[in-house]
Length: 461
Image (tube, rainbow, N blue to C red; front, side, top):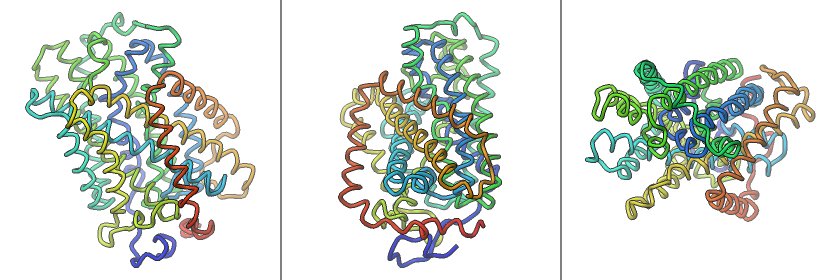
């Protein structure tokens, strides 16, 4: 890979991302990106539709993700590029389409970590009996995992694999402990009818949100065109089983009304079943931290690679594409979005009441970005099938049925996110307005030539 294809314009160095990942690493990254969605966040959906409403909402969301990841695997193997969704949309729809999809990806990946960091703080505050406060712990955790990512992808990938496996073991322990106390009567509560189900969709998405981020590690995979489908599809199957079991068994052992606004629903449910301070609840609380850490760490990988790729393209300031010559980590692409994500958490230091409900707001903003990304990526797939049928496609989805079903379900998800989560949309709108103003004033002035940008694919041909 030539340095000219991996550095920002005029960069004085020749460092680039290094290919060190295999299919197991991608599986760990795809699952690790999402596994925190089992440990927190989803329970907010029970406030809208009850346990049964959230379970019903999970059905179309699961079908969507299966069809989307099949479709996305075609894009990711066809264009194995660190820009992921921004690269696919640029190839299909030109520079503005690429920028818009890249911004949607950044909204998803920059606003998810604050929610996860808050959950880390919540788990530790619960475990310590209030000795450690949620907000300072959340900020410390966020900064710590930015630093771990700075050590390089090989170190990061090994760390992600270990914490993901530990987190999976923690879920198995929870499931086994919950089964003897399970009651279908607790799960069967449906409230607010169809409105409750559609209001819960945004939190059902949280069970899968960000797994597509593994595509942004494509330039660090040894055999991306072979390993991406394997890693994605095995990850999707793992997450589907995890989500159903976690939702059913958590709601089936405790009164859901006491869990739906907590950032630590699993240990709280076990405390309800086994008693406050029970050993099993403490064990799941400790291991649950590994699940949160896996996602926080993995999503930091995702936003840094998207930021790096967009800066390398010329959409964002070129200093964000700087890669450390020894660790091969995109330094400023790790730090700057991370600081943006820390800002909303930090307000909780001033006003403790501010932190109440902040997790749900961050989740909603992140989900909106993800759904916009999904729609633009699927449209890109349809365009590229017509526009460039001769492109090398190592993995082909069943076209047009699977992507068509996926696109219809994506619009259903968009409808639910918009019409049942109105309060958070002002922040989404503000983010897109700022991004669009930036693009038309500065961001469209220094975009690299199309052929040069996609020269990163040459070594795979």
